Structure formats: structure tokens, C-alpha cells
Amino acid sequence: MNKLYFSDCLKVLKDLHKAHPEGFIDLVYIDPPFNSKRDYNILFESVDMKDTKAQKEAFSDTWSNVSYLDTLSEIQYLDLDLYNFLTTLDNIRVSKSAVSYLTTMAIRIYYIHKVLKNTGSFYLHCDPTMSHYLKIICDLVFGTKRFRNEIIWHYKRWPAVQKNYQRMHDVILFYSREHGLNIFNTQLGKLSEGTIKRWKGKKSKVEFEGDIRLITRMTDEDSIGRPIDDVWDIAVINSQAKERLGYPTQKPEDLLEIIIKASSNEGDLVADFFCGCGTTIAVAQRLKRNWIGVDISHLAIKLILDRLTNPYQGPRAKVIRESIQVSGFPVDLAGAKMLAENLITVDLDFKTGSLK
Ligand SMILES: C[S@@+](CC[C@H](N)C(=O)[O-])C[C@H]1O[C@@H](n2cnc3c(N)ncnc32)[C@H](O)[C@@H]1O
Image (cartoon, rainbow, N blue to C red; front, side, top):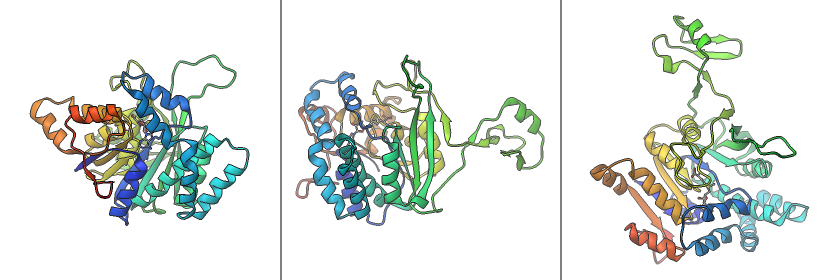
């Protein structure tokens, strides 16, 4: 059954690791908040959401300077190299908010590595302000040999006047759980009309032309293409985009489609531990993967349930809704109201406080 957790993902990750010590997830993609207050302020203020105060506090608590020292000492017993790296940052001229952010991410990345299968893959979506630090954390947790790609998501938006080159890309770090074991289905990009014409009618299935490997099947144009590289040109979700839900950090489905098709097969389990309005979940569902989604915001959980069921009417919507189990516990009044209004059954073991 597909599962949506309304919770801090660290709690979910620890519970999942306890239940599946050998690892059980095929693909994890995460797009955590970047290290900026602006990011979570816009998240809660720009959407039509009542009673945001408690939600905002719960959210910023996770990333605050208060909890990072506790987390740091927890890391000391999990991975000494990780601990030494973070304490070194803490002792040099790196801002406290950056160290706090990196500590918060490090412990979650540590558990993500644990819940992956041996054949699994991990994609971490970040931006150039933190990607260099996050890469060292991933190198320590996964091992440098497991680093597969630094993917550049190049987007276009209206340029602003400023004294530097326009910032138009995000970074996605791609790691495999084990060296050489990860599932990887090569994705093909489109060829130019001219190249297709030249190659039509050629008999061979795989040919080489310069550095371009052309995979051709004479009658099936869809399977003609060149393996895509690590720079992806994909439009951002702007106000005109059909898939736009109004969630400020929503990512395009085209981006997740490449990742999910490349690093999983039908029936595999895909997880997003910072799932926002559910782009990963929606694409995984469409591509017939099983999925787990986690978000600390009740707004996100509500949006995901609507996103998955709204395109359908009556019985089909009911079947989809019934195929999703929601676990979690409201941290504020608005969350409790949302759960009650949507008749979401919460699956929580009250004795242990663990999510089922
Ligand atoms: C950048 S957004 C993800 C957007 C998503 N990729 C999409 O396309 O909608 C980051 C999300 O992480 C969630 N979040 C922040 N801290 C969290 C935590 N500790 N555990 C789980 N989710 C968290 C936020 O509520 C937010 O929805």
C-alpha cells in the first residue's frame, strides 16, 4: 500500500530503518528546503493557509540552532567521520545557520542510505549555495565510488537586473547505494529532424556517429534518440504551467519523470522524504511505481491527496483514496482540523509513539 506520512522525516526514517534493517527502497529523491529562511517563509505565507503560526514554529524548530547540537552528538555515535566534518565546520568561519542546516541534513542522509536496497539510488536536489557541502556529506555517507552524477537542472525565467550572471540552475547529486549495482535505464533525448532523416532506413539497431550513440529501430520513432547527459533543460513551473498547484517550491513533473524512469522499474518502491505537494508521488503513481511520501506540513499532505484523486470522479477517486494510507500526528490546530475534515485515519502506535 502507498503511504503518506505527516511527520518530520527523521522520525519516519528511524522507524523504517528499525522495521527494515536490510534496506527496502529502490529510489529516494529529496528536495529539502534550501538553507534560507525566505524559503520556508514563502512556503507558509504565500499560500492561502489559516493558522500558520504553529505550523511555522514546528517547521523552523527542525532547522533551528537549538536542536543541531543534540543532533551533532547523535551523529558522533553513528558516523565519526561525519561528526568530525561537521564539528570542523562548526569551528571555522562557516555560519551557524549553515552548520545547523548541514547537521540536520546529514542525519537524514545517513538514514536514507540505510533504508535503500543494495540496488537503490539516491537523488538530492539542492542549489549552488549548499551543494558543495552536501556533496562531502554524501561522499562520506555513501562513499566517493558511489557518486554517479552531478546533474544540472537548467531552467529559464525572466532575468532580473543584477551585478552577476543570472542564476538559472539547481544541482541534483546522484548516488548509488552500492558501486555498479544500481538500476539504470538509459533515457533517450530527442534527435534533430535532420539526423532522424539520415538514419531512417538504416538496418542496424545500435550505431555510432562521432560521439553520438544512435539507437535506432527502423519503424519505431519513439525509440530513436541519444542518451541524455547530465545537463537538463526543463522549464520551471510558472504561473501558466498546467500542472501548477500554487505550492511555491513545486518541481516540474518532467524532471521527476527522467529520474524515476532511469532509476526504477514498474512495481519498484520510490520514496520522497520532503515531498511538498507531491510531484514525485504523482509521477511515481502514473508510472506504476509504489511510493512513500513524507512531509511535515499538513498543507502538503492535503494537496497531495487532492492531486491524486481530483482528476477522477466517483468510485475511481474512492479506490485511489483507499489505496493510500496516511500516518502521522497533527502538531497544531490547523493540522488537527485538516485531519478531521478529511477523515484521515492516523496510524500511530500510542505506546511507542512510532508511526506504523
Ligand atoms: C522544497 S519543498 C519540496 C517540494 C516538492 N519537491 C514538490 O515538487 O512539491 C520542501 C518540503 O519539505 C518539507 N519539510 C521541511 N522540513 C521537513 C522535515 N523535517 N520532514 C519532512 N518534511 C519537511 C516542507 O514542508 C516542504 O514541503
